[in-house]
Length: 171
Image (tube, rainbow, N blue to C red; front, side):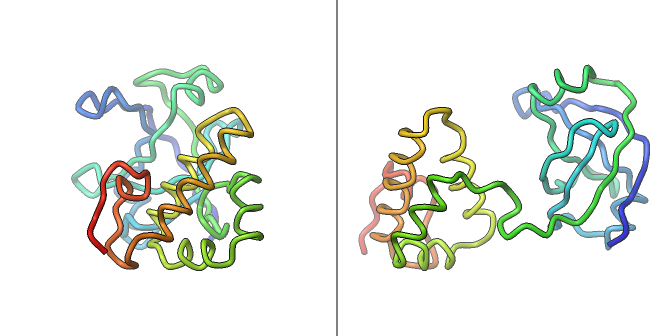
């Protein structure tokens, strides 16, 4: 895929707790094949690059979310015009894997095999949940807990609540 360059604006979804996003115009969505299940590297104003996926916005348009931290880094707000470059994300999971989780996968073949059976979105959810804490020890603890819980579940229908240990399902 050739990188796509375009100008757009920052929007805000009030119904999603005020989530900010980069709007992807319909013609750009069409240039990406008209699909929303594609993982991309999104560069805004040639300053911040991050991994994301396009979500349908309506009328053929899409969006990629933008965190408050990235808004601050960019010095933009709702309504600001921005320059965007989109490239195909060729990374294995579409998000950086914390070192602590990677290390657990090296040590736990069964846990890695179960993780690999999950759908890509669930894999990213686990990776991002582990990465969300700043402390290395907490990332280790979360990795061990999530993969341990995952190994106890029947493959194919696991929910994130079950993997978190918040729900029990009969096996």
